[in-house]
Length: 170
Ligand code: AMP
View 1: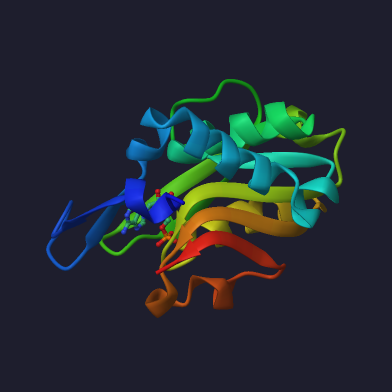
View 2 (view 1 turned 180 degrees about the vertical axis):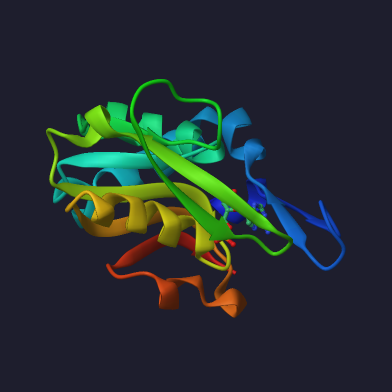
């Protein structure tokens, strides 16, 4: 039985020295593996208990939209600067080198209270924490996090408030 780890490629020193980049795109080239992965993620308690999924740009969109389709849950997005029109909530967060900003459209989250945050990789947790802060600024709850891979040594889950379900912990 093939495992998702057989379709994930590690690239040392990309995009910066010392980072082992996890390339998950191989999963998309294996429809049966991808479908199993999405079935598993979509049926998790964390997704079932949420009102909506918040997917993080960019690879979070790939997994988030498939989970939304499979679970029947609505999906909203957190994006990088200058991508979203309308009234936004913005928050800056730390990257390994410098900072970045994530934004959510205020109107997009109005109807929902409990969110599950979806991304491809949980590394330091800064990105998922920023998405959490954005929702909390608007009085929303984060019911949990769904990640494809979690890099255990970076202890990203320590920064997060709800349960984290990762399909592969490396
Ligand atoms: P972090 O904020 O450190 O948890 O990083 C999470 C975000 O950066 C995710 O959106 C990932 O797509 C990306 N990322 C961080 N580290 C890696 C890695 N080693 N391989 C692939 N993507 C990564």
